[in-house]
Image (tube, rainbow, N blue to C red; front, side, top):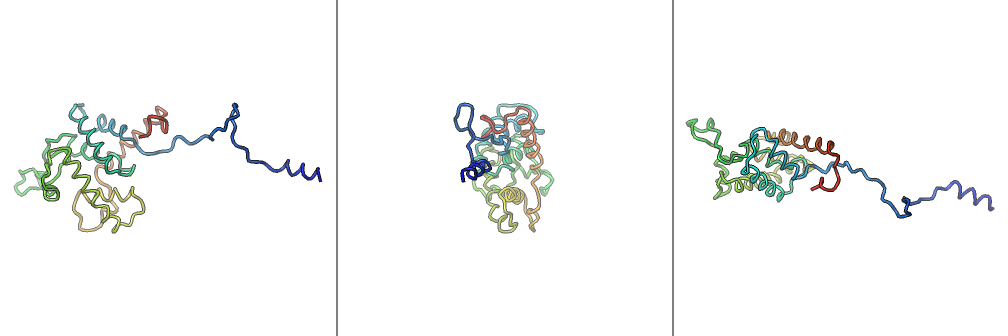
Length: 218
């Protein structure tokens, strides 16, 4: 009987918690390289230094970027489109609120249809009464609100299961009029630049080796 009990104890592996040299329970090692998406501090730097349409630094540009970060964060977009407002402003105007464009779409080919940092058309003034398209803060809020308004329609028509894909389609739907549902399978033109910034951030994290550590999450 005693020999059978000893054999049973020998072959059964008890569950023993991880104990350090000090005898104190130690949490098992975790994967600290999990991708939580880019932080807004990282995106701020990408927009400031890696916008191909605004290569020169200016205090005005940095102030606009800081302001746009605050505005976008208030809408809590998913990680894959984080920085969308910055990418759009970079490509549309190089963060210059005084830009005018799209003359070719006017009747006489001379009048600018688009104005401001996000190159908004006059239709935005009808959607948002009192909007000043040349004011960066007002333009940014209107741009984000207009895109967010497309989300219920996109969910109803496109039937996406993730917020990531829904926001991309809403971004497209908010930018231009569509006679069909092709926006369900498209990406916005600014998304290529945004993805480049996201890749830069991942590469920089690997270089400095701080992914998941204090100061790298935000």
